[in-house]
Length: 113
Image 1 (cartoon, rainbow, N blue to C red):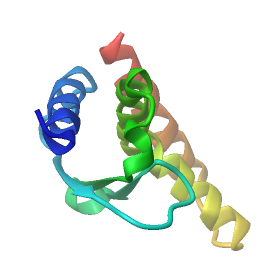
Image 2: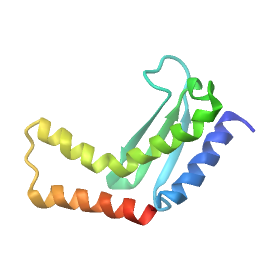
Image 3: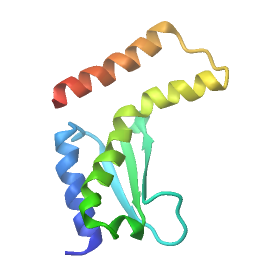
């Protein structure tokens, strides 16, 4: 099984466990310089995510599953990260928007466990 197939199998497994079946999650195998072994870019408005994985992720194969789980969890936390960045950039967020993002994340976690 190729590295790409290994990662795709893990994405498929955890996409279901994290209840992300309605998301389109693409995989990109990278090469060259990297700051981390993997990353996840989320387009929440379109229910899309791109998981990028560098070769360093395969140096310790026992860590690969955790790496993929971690990257997919960024999908769950993306909205709260966006709100935090907005606040840092002095963009006003209402109490309702913040509570809604928090409630969505909380319910998502509750349904997973």
